[in-house]
Image (cartoon, rainbow, N blue to C red; front, side):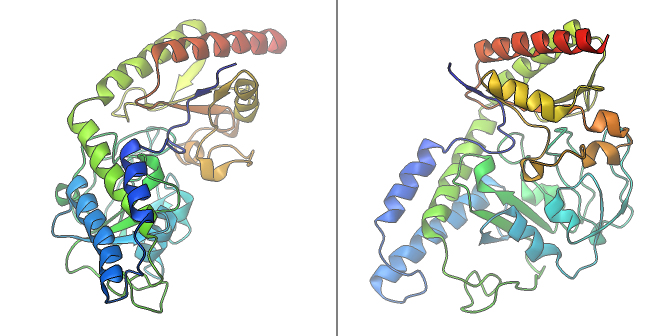
Length: 347
């Protein structure tokens, strides 16, 4: 049985451009903090990637700080600040903020104090795209970058974070983008790497990968490749809706990522669906990958005002540029078959 991967919002395949850059970086011997030729060669790899990430994210003139993940980038930006957010944010944001802002049924958040607020560009579960108010303190663009047009320079944010493995870089490398004149307090102190904001010997190989992947991801967005993915997603949702008149598709009527479909049939547990689809050869999720193993229901949907039953019945399908119509047809047939069994048992 050929498995079908439909969980691209959790992680993506390594891009060939990233792999090539990483293999090349593996041949570089020096410590990037050393002043000799070998050290300068390693430092050059990092600075090349820094320029690539800046160019790809439209962040020329901003500072790019490489981290181990978006989670670390979030901590670097938010720890000790006392910023506000809504509960629809990723856990790595809510860990450092006060969840006092409210979200509506589409997940949109009213922001009255941007300079003291963290607001995601895109929600990882629903795929709903937010409009950022000018001067927002931090924007989580982990899901946005590489799927929709994005430039830090016109986003209005003071800080933004990305995660490499969401757009074809290796796992374990991310970045915090900081507007000039905005400071952060170092969480990791020691050797003073990354302009004194993130000490520790840099992950040269991973950084080479995120630089190359960022350039390739931006190129694909500019080429309009995600339009075909949106068409396939819309076909899937129409197919499932025709078969299941009680399906709820979250964010269906507002701007969403082109690859994301998040839906629920009340009473049919999301965790059950994930297991059924897995056994049938499909990788899907019940929400954020960082919440796997939890059966309490989507905190995002609860924050949007949905009840516990609905929140615990949702699954997310997220497509990639590699996804084919044939794969989606197979998934649709399988899901509909299991849906009919569920309805028969529930009758």
